[in-house]
Image (tube, rainbow, N blue to C red; front, side, top):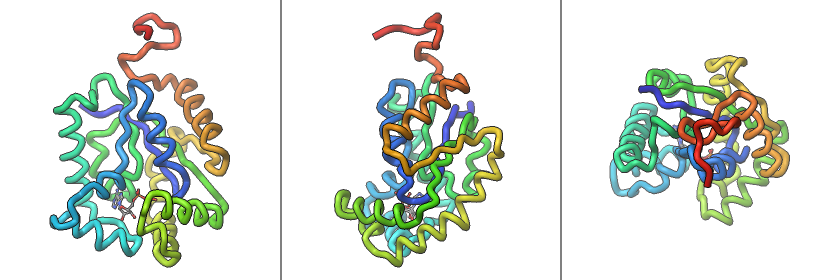
Length: 211
Ligand code: ADP
């Protein structure tokens, strides 16, 4: 069974994590943030060491390792019924991050919509990351050189995914506006495309439950 999925795509600092976490609070959506999963790893393990090695330089963790970790974590969430694929919509944030990952995930994802959180203003992205470095104690946000490499990595490896998924399923969202405005755009697009997780009330209310 393929997972009904929406993707959040955007440069570091574009607000994927904020929007993903907010959507994940709504019944019927399950948020998976790849970066958060990496950050919970024990840094003494081989995969934890690999994460530190690459993220501290602003680079991506190798694809096979990343996808393997993704599978293990998603399976755990399914087994513990935290993520219920038959009724929940998966909100992916930070994965896939390049074409190779998209191809590896393709057999298991039914991508309904890709939200492109775009931002032309590089200086604003950098300012957001620096603010986050202090607030969330993120070492990879604190260093200008690492930030520069991450933005380049995004342009080179992740931005081509927009072409991979094709314009018909991409919703362009101006990510420079306040989070509540961005969220409003996202939820409006979901409703317009009738992407309402199975098992939650439909707009007509004919198969849903209240409360
Ligand atoms: P941001 O979106 O701000 O770059 P994340 O928290 O999503 O931050 O990711 C932090 C770091 O974790 C990345 O710079 C990268 O090294 C690693 N990472 C996260 N997701 C992936 C992925 N899908 N593939 C490879 N590396 C990843």
